[in-house]
Amino acid sequence: MPRVAPWRPYAVLAAILLFCAAGLLLYLDERSSRDHAQVVGTAPGPDFLEVDVTLQRVDAAAQTLTAKVLVQPHGALGQADSPLVPAGDVVLETTSLEQSTLRYPAGQQIGSSAVSFSLFDGRVSDYPFDHYNALVGFQATVGGRPAPVVIGLTGADPFFVFRQTDEVSEDGGIAVTERISRSRSTFILAWFMMAAMWALALSVLVAAWLIVRQRRGIVWPALGWMAATLFALVGMRNAAPGNPPIGSLLDYAAFFWAELLVAVGLTMVVVRGARIEGGHKG
Image (cartoon, rainbow, N blue to C red):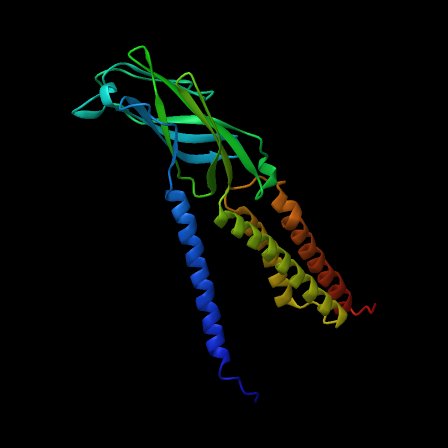
């Protein structure tokens, strides 16, 4: 019986600890980047409107970005004893095509509003390499007078990351272009799924080739494993983060070919095994 080198268990343990540490560092780095809020615009004085925007959900198929918007008046624009109660009627113009105007009456507490922004310059079929742009902008008046706006942006969708690429200020309003791409965890998992699909498909194909080459006939346990792999690949593909549509790059790069190879291997074993079991040599 061959002896196992005494250092090998320690090397395996060290490799496991190294991978765990690397994964933890990657998680902490992504977590810290998500906690970092973007501040767009500069207040010219103590009187301004702070517009806090939480980017909650990206729907790549519908080309929409859903955000929660909360307006906070500062200085003379709000009431000193109630920070969310404006001193005058607030009218907030947005770059949304669906909720272009938000109104908050004077003397009433401001509540958060759900606003949808449009995505452009992106195709969901490029998953997991797809990326988009969204224009998030606001212009406000308080009591009929223009009011300066400062935007605070925070990303909350775990499947995407948000980065500022451009900023435009004009006539008291401000707009920022957000570049939206898949998160690191989504990207890593999508790559792993493609590699796993190819690995499973090639494993089935190699096993099928060996069974046929060795003239083993119909090996029922092997057929059960191959058929299970055929359907397991469908479940794996449907579990892809972000629910990419059929026909995306993920399918053409791995899923379609993996299903084809497994089906070919399964059929090859059945046809060749049936000939052998039936007493025909070929």
